[in-house]
Length: 51
Image 1: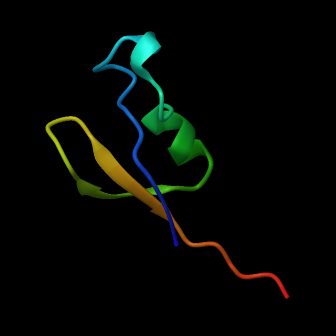
Image 2: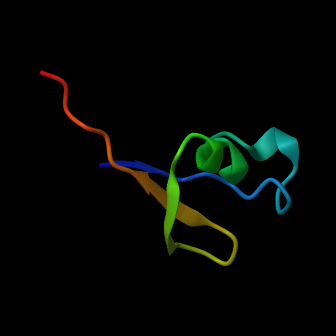
């Protein structure tokens, strides 16, 4: 499982998007898992192992 800690692009200025925008993670197949602040989510994605 891979976790990400993106920012909501609508709640912070672009200069503060160090971890990327939430919408970018969602476009890459991540799902919102749990909130860790008023506007922040932990997003997760399961990745299959390679042989």
